[in-house]
Length: 63
Image 1 (cartoon, helix red, strand yellow):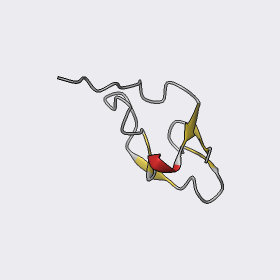
Image 2 (cartoon, one colour):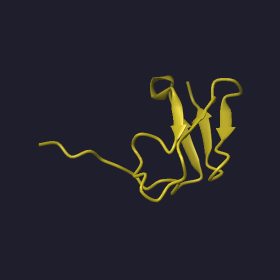
Image 3 (cartoon, rainbow, N blue to C red):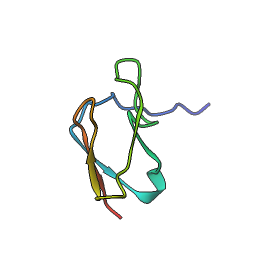
Image 4 (cartoon, rainbow, N blue to C red):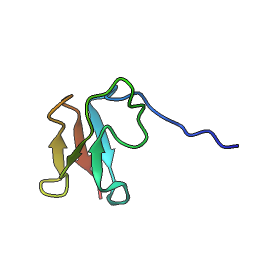
């Protein structure tokens, strides 16, 4: 049995995102969501960087 690795929601202020991670939502699929804000989809492709309107986390597209 394989355990899914998760990270705490909004625990960091900056995240690097790859094209394979799109579509991008905050919190992401890898985050525990019990303590997070409502899921919001973010358009990181438009400018290469986007901030979450709920928690302020910054997502940067690196490829």
